[in-house]
Image (cartoon, rainbow, N blue to C red):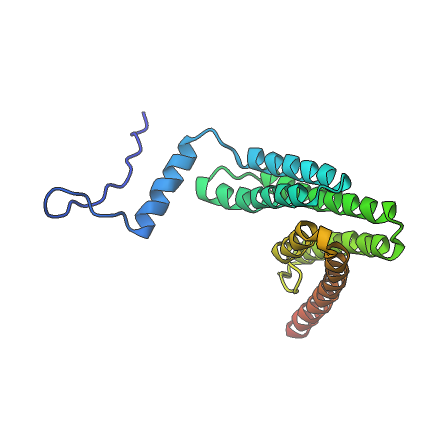
Length: 213
């Protein structure tokens, strides 16, 4: 029979009080509690999907502040699921696949709602830029996955997921002040630049490997 897990206890100070836990002990205590909980990384990922679906509906209805808040909440779940997976030790290969897949779906859904708003206002340029932003987002993810399949680490580029979330969140929250279209233009431009950065990075890495061989 496995021995019960013992949680770290802080040493006692003078007077019988326990000293505060150090950072390492706090992390271990948190990890133990996460392992013992029923929460799974996949549940957090699905919660993030629901938050982004709610955000998309609110944006489509042009309730931008509420939509921005829902988008931020859903994106926070997207950030936490991977970290929780590592801390709790509950991560699986399917969980990693699901997390990455839902990230792409969520970003696409929210940007589709943004494009619908531009189409309703007959802003063809902004709608087209939104399509470019979606394509660039997918290609940023694809180029990394394809590069890593070739054995090349590919995390370079200025428009990471976190950067894109910040830009889009600001645009949605400030949409009533006219910030939505500029944020989409920035997303499309930075996403395109990031794809090019990754293409050139992989080419250089593969050429260096061929030269070394």
